[in-house]
Amino acid sequence: MIEIQYSEIVDVARSFSESPFSTIEFANRLRDLFPATMNSLEIEYGKGGAGAGKHFSAYSRIAQTLDKYAKRQLLVKLDYRDAPSEFGSLIIRYWCNIEFSPQFPDEITQPETFLEGAKQSVVVNRYERNLAARKTCIGHWGTVCLVISMCIT
Image 1: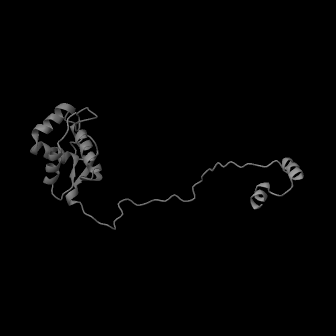
Image 2: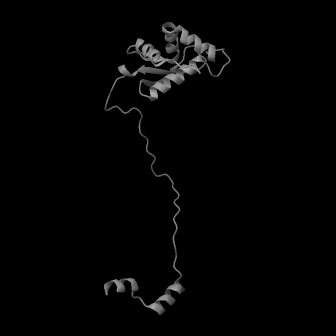
Image 3: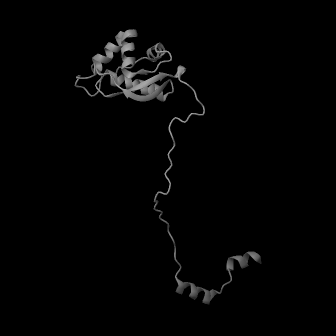
C-alpha cells in the first residue's frame, strides 16, 4: 500500500495557505510538488476520475489519507461541494489546513436535535406475594419482626 509521507501532506496543505481545497486540487498539487508520489499512487490504484472504470483510485487513496489526518486534527474536513466535470463523482470533499481554520468558540458546528415524546418500552420484574401464604405466616408467627426484636434485646 502506497503511503503519502506526512511531510508531503503538510507541504501540500500549506501550499493552499488559507484557501480550502478539494481532494482533486490536493491531488493536482501533490503531482506538482511530489510527482514521484503521485505517479506511485496512480500506478498502484489507477488514475480514477470520469471514465476510469475503477471504484477505488489514486484520488480515493488521497481522500482516505486526508481523512486520517483530519481525524488526528491536522486538517479540517469541510463539507462536500460540486465536483469538477472530469471527476468521477458529482460531489467532492473539501479540506482546510488546520493552521488556517477559523476558530469561533461560540459557533455551533452541527445543530443539536432532540427527540421528545418517543415511545419507550420498559421491562420490569414485579414479584407478587401469595395472599394465602402471607395469611398463614402471620397466623403462625404473628406480625412482630424477629430480626428487629433480636437486635433490640
